Image 1 (cartoon, rainbow, N blue to C red):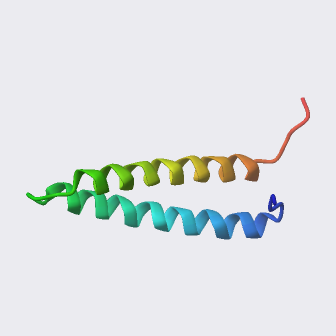
Image 2 (image 1 turned 45 degrees about the horizontal axis):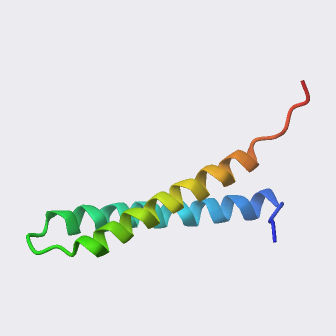
Length: 68
């Protein structure tokens, strides 16, 4: 199901950006620990990339189509 309402897309975009920032902070903290869990770190980085892709898709949907 594709959301078309710009206000709903903006809300989703804001939520994804918050989650992305929180994950970035968590990754930095985990990377600094001596006994870090590499598998967890890898999963967190993968999730961060998925969030970045989702953010990019929503941002591109918010750009109005212009007929050339």
